[in-house]
Length: 240
Ligand code: CAA
Image (cartoon, rainbow, N blue to C red; front, top):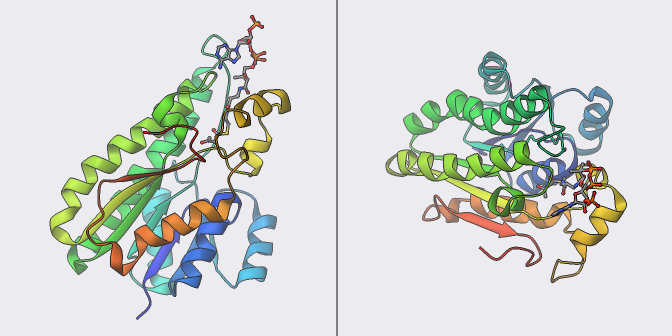
């Protein structure tokens, strides 16, 4: 039986590439998305991967969404917590809402999805959870106290849950992408982005597929001895 995987934020950007990489690895994939029905429909038509709409910051919605995926495709063996948002701004300008939205989605989403799937993985003696962190959670970033805190939290969450999952065959790892060529990075003002890219030793933005191939490795049958790790894929921008 093919493993069943959920990729949150799985219809666009890095998430779309991850959905495709897991499909190519032979998994049955469900792509979660939050709001863009049109992009999700186009994604499903193009890839054959079903898309399921719920908000990962909503705890009950995650429990219900995972149950819906399991009813349609089978018990969930693999979760990739990729859904993430930015609400950039310096602390002086950042609203409480911008703080809370980013923490609840980027970090809260990991907790909610793990709560919805971990017990089943434990009972079946096999599971893979991969959390998408960020270089900005490792190094900080001007204008991103919310995002950096959430992503840094993801790295701690990963190491703690890895310790809980190890004896049940459930591995938990993180990937820390650098600046990848997606809509999220395209939203950074061009002059600011040019200065950032100038500091990347490889000299360019990353491609979504370069993150997705790392995720596919960590989700594979052969990666059972890799847990609690963070794989940095950032063109050498931050060596950590
Ligand atoms: N360190 C120190 N000072 C800095 C700085 C830095 N890194 N960046 C800017 N400043 C200074 C500027 O020089 C400027 O100073 P002066 O007024 O004295 O000239 C001051 O801070 C204000 O800078 P801005 O004009 O940029 O301020 P703003 O309020 O217009 O914009 C901002 C602030 C929205 C945060 C903008 O700087 C920005 O968008 N920065 C990019 C944030 C970023 O990298 N986001 C990543 C999104 S993608 C992502 O997150 C994916 C991932 O995981 C990698």
